Length: 288
Image 1 (cartoon, rainbow, N blue to C red):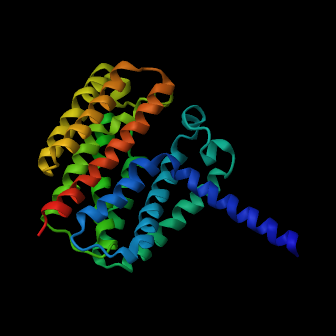
Image 2: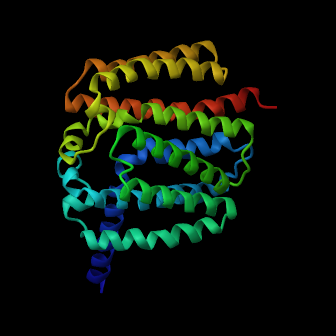
Image 3: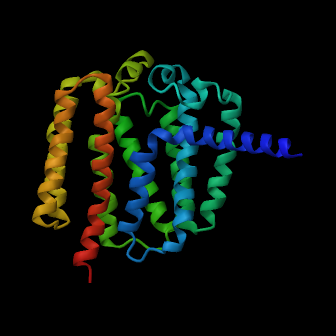
């Protein structure tokens, strides 16, 4: 009896790990920043809904990631062999079953928070189909644009789930975080460049590598400066944020090995998380 219970526990924990691995690479760039963004964008967030918020974001992220990783599992053999499909933790058919099961789950869950959350969920599904079935991820421009739109919708939905209507400050926070994401998203493509070339994916990094590096070296510090002024960050914090952004941007130009790109992407993820804290800074010090 005890051994059966232990076996059942191992199988369940194994399935949980498998689901987590589908979303592992997006935890720092999507789940954590959007969770923080929801609090910054919402004028009166309901802290009791934090578990609801995390579950809502993660399920939508999981649904998209499974769909996306089903398209080119051979690419992940090179770039991310730990993912469930190349690692053999789940079959393609079972992954497809989970992906389609999550569609009604996400819609029903969203409906519990009202029509706005339901609309966001439906839009995210439409964008996911466009992205994966109609070549939305094949070129740098369409990939960045579609991802930025999905990011904005995910932030809006998360704000609704946290229990608040979005105000002007929140709308500005969502808009700027999405634009920042659209213009710096290719930071994640440097570490996947070799696999993207093999898969025929035309990203900014594979098509215009020098421009892509220059855009990071210039864009990240400039965004750091602009956002510091936009959200009226004090001088010391502004200097620290701009200095960190300068270091992050410069790394993409100076260090060009695969291992260096992975480290640069981690540092970029931290910078992007800090971007989402700035509206919260404004609310704390200037909101009346």
